[in-house]
Length: 213
Length: 144
Image 1 (cartoon, rainbow over the protein chains, first blue to last red):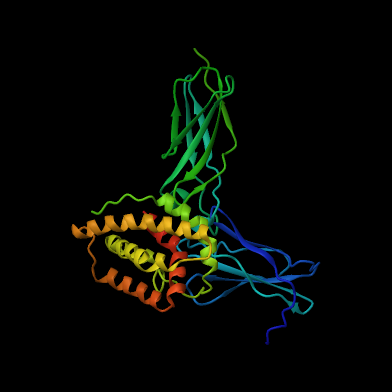
Image 2 (image 1 turned 30 degrees about the vertical axis):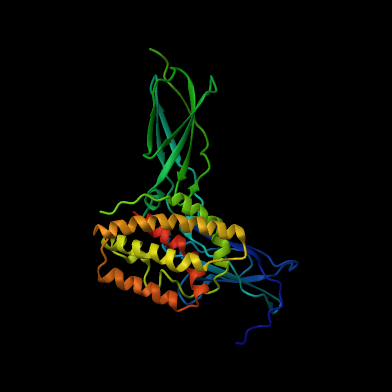
């Protein structure tokens, strides 16, 4: 069928929002379009000739579309595009910038677990997993994706308010020579030097060292 | 074995600063200089040094000099990246001269394809597209 005459204002700010390589396309409705606007989405692999329609995001009224499955190969780069429809009118296709899942994703903080003795606390950190299609799917830690991944760890003495920072490459840390019977709070962040990526700090995990016997 | 130190973080941050600007100047979605028809990730590990050496020569000799823009900030970032590439290029040449970075037929064919992709466009478009694909090269180099 012939292309409709496209005079509808365009969707705006078409972009990928990516966390742990869960890659979701977002956009804003056309200016002043009101209710009833529908959208369709297509995507392409950079360097490959064709655009591919996303059936699950055809004639949708929401302003996002999960393209994680289609963009899961992080050795490739992608474009995505959105078109709006309303009352027989349509907009132009509006494209993202080139999306590189490896460098353009955000990373969640690590999981932190702590245990204590009288004078030390032990910290175990777990990097988040890369997005996967289904819970049964193969788990890939972001540690495998980013070989240079490191952890920044903050340890706070709740009594003295003294804070230490550690930067470690492996995922365990023992902090010795602490005061017995004292509460310490631990928070950690992931840091990748290249490509340059870092998570926020995790929420604090507090634990008390055992009392002196 | 050819071991080279390079300021990957510096190159990365320089490229990140101009990536959107440079890629926006490349309207051709359907062709990649480095990835067509096969991704760099298909290169065997034994051929990595050869391809890296040829690509650094390629970027220094054919790409950066044709990437002049009207934006002085972008130009400064490009020349900073070019300087980093120049020093790595020299180190790779030393490796090559010490027979540590030899090229077999496969990597030579792969690089010929990259040159053919490049020469299939006019010089400025080819150079800008190649520059816009720098993260493809860096991602591949950093992959363990």
